[in-house]
Each structure stands twice: as structure tokens, then as C-alpha cells.
Amino acid sequence: MENATLEEGWESQAFDQVCALGIISAWLMYPTLVQYLLGLVRCRHLDSGGHVYLMADMSIKCNDATHGAWLFLLFLFGIIYILGIPLVLLSILSSEGENFNTVGMRYRVGFLYKGQDVDRAWWWELIVFVRKMVLAGIVVLFSDSPLYGAYLSVWLLEACFVIHLLADPYDNDRQNRLEVYGLIAAIVTINCGILYIDGAEGHSANLLTVCVFAIHLGMWALLVKSLLEEYAAEGRTAMIARAQHDIQLEENVADELEQARLDTSINAEKMEKLAALRSMAGARMPFADNDLLEHIQTGSVPDVRGDHTSLSEKLKEMRAAWKERHDADINGQSKFLADEAHRGQKFLSAAEKWRRRQQHNENDNGTEHADIQQNNEIGSTQTGDQRPWRERMKDRTTSAT
Image (cartoon, rainbow, N blue to C red; front, side):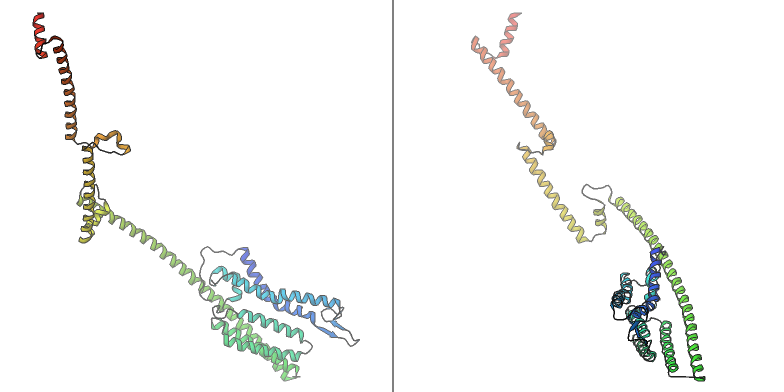
């Protein structure tokens, strides 16, 4: 757990502080809660009579209705506290997720896993709770037989010592060493107590006392030393994490600036290339665009030839469609779109327009000639004169003068 990550702008809130304080308080109060709850089952037989009384309250007789109510409360609070506290703490730890290196998670629930190898020994904190519960039960239930209780405690600590050596639950030597020395100190202390119970006196008792005090003073010194080293390691880790964060931020800014510069350069290069293509290709063609011009310059010969063939086929199709439309217009069968009906003459050529105008004039002249001939025939019929109309009009004019 040496690799902490820095969360930008993270600050502890009231929820974070309450969560951290509640976890630490529950962890520290757990042995005391187990001890007082198990005290409800400890009874003693008094010499004054045949009654058995509860050690926690000598006014209550064991095995009666009142004591039965207390046993029910023991069962209820045993589920809530003895089993509930470890399960609740582990559920809180699992609900935080697997990103154990974030500052927020280390602040809230780091007391439960900091220093442990969570990938390999995530279950170690449960072993610690079981050890506390069993030791507290031995102390309470075997208070009248201290020798038996001491032997059971030693066997339990030795089993935990072996499990620790096999599991190696911590990820650095400092914390492993502190745990090993703590278990050894507890084992030695209980063995010294066994020797006291067996009747050690005089210099032996003094030697055992000095040994116990020396062991505990040494453990306190090792604890203080380990705490200072842990604080220093966390300070270095936080400083390295902040430096890495600053470096990453600088790299991100540099990458953004470089990308912006590269985009500007690419845009400028594209504009220069476009200007060169336009100057090379001249004015924009009806069926060409910038992409086509660029493809003509940069494309391979087969690709350009294929595009040219495709454009030629399209041009042939357009010419054929135009010719078909032109022929239909000449035959008087022109068809226009709805929006072109009012300007149908737009598609007539100049020669066609002249030809239609001449045909219209000939039709007008033919009509006038037919009228004149009809008048001549009428006049001839009336007078019997078969001369042309002009000659008859000339004679009339002469005779009138």
C-alpha cells in the first residue's frame, strides 16, 4: 500500500471524519464489548448456600427467569456486536471498492487495511477480530482457573504466530516485524504469568518482573519507532504522488499545446496546398471540387484513369439524354417539368425559333392569298369580267377620273 494516488481538490468532509472515527472506535472497543457481554454467563456458587449467583450482579440468581432474560439479551447483543462489528466493518470496506490507493478511501477505512497486502491476504483483519474475541472469552470464562486460561491463551497466540508466518499478510518488513514481535511479547508475558502461578518467589520473581517490564518497554519503543517510520514513509509517498500528479498535469498541458500547434500547422499546410492546387488548376470546373483536384494531383495513374472513365460515361449519358430531349422537342413532343412549363421555349435553339417564325408567316400569307382569290371569284361571278382584280380596279380608277 505504498503507492498512493493524489486526488485533485480532495478535502475531508464530515462524513469522512465520522466514518474514520467510528471505525477506529469500534475496533478499539471490540475486546471490551466481548468481555462485558460474556460476563453475563459467568456464575459463582457461594459457600453460604446452594444458590448460584451471577458475577456481574450478585442480586440475580442464575438459571431463573431474570437470568434467562439476560441470556436472551446476551444472544441478541452478541449477534449485534460480537458478530456484527467485524461483518459491518468488512462490508464497509468492500463497499468502498477496490481502488485502495485513493486518498479518500485511505482516509475513511484505511485503518482496516493500511499496510496489508489486500490482493493476497484481504481476510487477515477477520483473523485479528477472531483472536481478540477468543482471548477476551478466555479471560472472562477462565477467571476462576487462571492457569488453564493462561495455557489456552498461549496456545491461541502460538497458533496465530504460525498463521502469521505462513500468511505474511503485510506488504512491508516493518509491519511484519512489529506484528511478530508483538505476538512474541504476548507469549512471553503469559508464560511469565504461568511461572508466577506455579509459585516463583524471591529472585526468580524479581527476574520475571524485570523481564516482563523490559519486553513491554521494548515493544513500546518499537511501536514509536515504527509509527515515526510510517509517518515518514507516508509523507514521502504523498510527496511523490503530488510530484507525479504535477508532472502528469504538465505533460497533459504540453500535449494539448503540441496538439494545438500541430493542428494549426496542418491547417496552414492544407490552405497552402489548396492555394497551390487552385493556382495550378485555374478556375473551378463545373463538375470538380477541391477533393477532386487534390485527387488528380496526388492519386495514382490507374485511380485517375478510372475516375476519368467514370466521368466520361456520365457525360455520355448526359449528352444522350439531351439529344433525346432535343429530338422530342423538334417533333413537337417536348415534355417539360411542372416548374418549366411556363418557360418551355427556353430549350429551343435559335435556328428552330427562326424556322417556326417563318412557318407562322407563311401560314399568315397563305390565309391572305386565299381571301383575295375568293373576292376575285365573287367579283367575276357578279360582272362576268374574268380579268384580274388589280386590272379591274385600275380601270375603275381611270373611268372615275
